[in-house]
Image 1 (cartoon, rainbow, N blue to C red):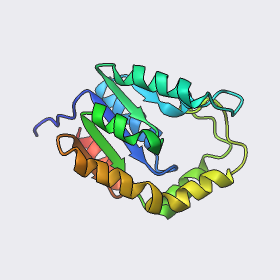
Image 2: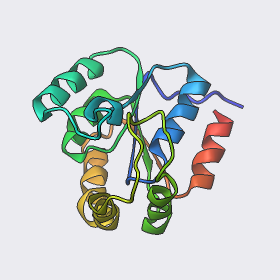
Image 3: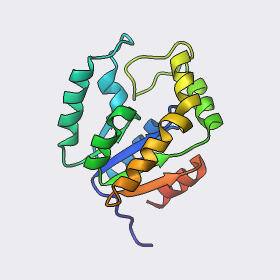
Image 4: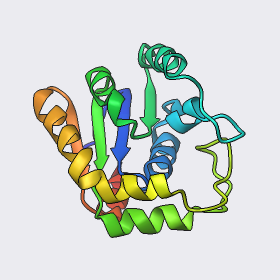
Length: 167
């Protein structure tokens, strides 16, 4: 089997609850590329976040690196991150799958965020409910705008898992 070439700068995107962080961690384990969870950049341990300008500076610094896997949706930064990436992996799952994902992680300690969600956040629920209308079209448009980027779009967890196991 021919080894897949995915480059050294890989962006993992998708609706909240799609499993971006889990997918990125498994990809990191297979490739050895450095892993960056943007939620660990944005959020503080007390559940507050850093100022937008500070986040943007940190993101710019990360993007200048030669090798990384980056997960986190942060739609306002899609374009700068797509431009910097070699490969964009889009976990394009149905709303029901993502909603189940955000529900299942409540109360779970996670390595991709510096605090533990104690209850289902209504803002997060709204993001999931509106993702197909608000963020998905913008991301698909950017993937068309940058045809030099390898875009891998997985419509199911099973397809993404098969791809990872074949890597």
